[in-house]
Image (tube, rainbow, N blue to C red; front, side, top):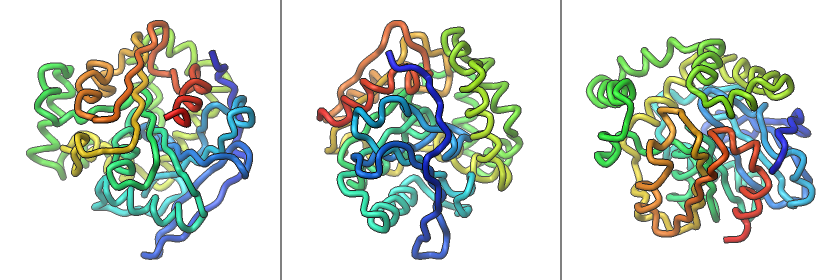
Length: 289
């Protein structure tokens, strides 16, 4: 099992986009390594990576990218999931990220899948991934509070976005810790991890809350692509102990059935933090497809 060894980014920068915006990014691992895009979880930023202790031996160059309005990336107020795929296309071409693959953690999962649907990446690993919460098959499985948010997003998206914009870095930390299994709390509250995670939260909210709010509206809305049409390999990783109500409520079972190339794994002794506790097998499997 991989440790949660946390390292600050080895390289950071921004990449200009054709419309004048920039994307902020951080990197870990060898520059000559195989590129892996990290689509971070909710309200985190390029400051939080994973698997730093195994990147050299797995030959991976990990690139975490801030979504628009978070961290160092320019806002794009009415963006969609497919706009993210377009941004990643420009990043990939500008930085010559040949053979790019992606990892989507938690709320980053639909963003990674958007890149797969647009064929911007060659394979995807969804880790503790958020599901298509607005899909009819999900409704009976969701916590009642999540159903209310999905319904609010469908009927009054501007009101929902304003509601999500009330979030803060401290509130997000409290929410994550409060809804996590004790196995995950042990990971998240380990001093070095907590320091890195809280720095990522602070950086994500450095421009305000609009970026997070937009992300969450997209996560609560129907996806603008069909998982059934995705042709690149997709790994789904879940921890059986994961208690987050906004991750897949059936640990990816329904989503895996919708993805033609899906391979699903549920780790019996892991929770939602398995991106950090299982980094090596996640990365190794990503390149074994």
